[in-house]
Image 1 (tube, rainbow over the protein chains, first blue to last red):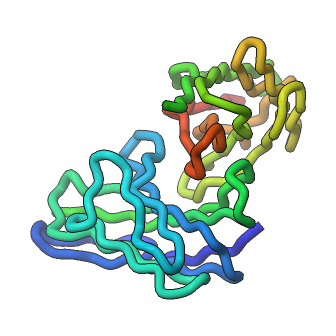
Image 2 (cartoon, rainbow over the protein chains, first blue to last red; image 1 turned 180 degrees about the vertical axis):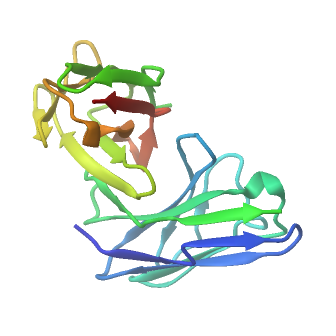
Length: 116
Length: 112
C-alpha cells in the first residue's frame, strides 16, 4: 500500500480565489493522478501527473483552471484557480505502484473544498 | 472508450440479508477490475480486485468474479452488517489506459 497525505483536508473559499492542494506520498511513485468527486457523484479524473513531464489533462479539464506541479517522485500539487461554487468538490490524489497499468490505485483522504 | 456501469442505488437491506451489486464494463484488451468502498466521512479504500478472467477477488466476506464472457464483476456478500453501510464503486484499469475508470457508485444502507 501507500501512505498519501493531502493538505488541506478541507477549506472554505471565496469565489474568484485560488487554492493549492498538496499531496505527499511516503515513497517514490511514477504515476500520480488527481480526481474530483462532486457532491453525491462518482470520481472523475482531472489529470495524470508524471514526474519530468507535463501533466496530461482529461477532456473537460484545462491547465489554466487546474495547474499541476510534480517536482519530484513523492510530491504533487493541484491548484484550483478562479474558483466558483461549481468547484465545490472533494479533490483526491492517488498513486499507482510500479509502471504497469493494471494495478490498483491508492487514494489520499481527499481535500473537501466549499466555494461560497 | 472504456467504461463501467453499475446498478443504481440506494440499496437498502436488513442486517444478515444477501447483497448483490451489479457491475458491467466495456473495455478493449484485458483490464483489471476493482471494487472500492467509501465509508461515511472516510477516504476511498480498495475492497477487492481481480486481474484476469475467472479470477475471484475476496475480502471482508465480499466476493466478485471476473466474468469476461458477460463482461461483469458483480459484488456479493452472503450476510451484510450495519457496518457495511457505505458507497461502493466498481472500477477498471488497463485496456490501453493508465487511469482508473469508476462506475457511478452504489450507496448501501443496512438496517438492524
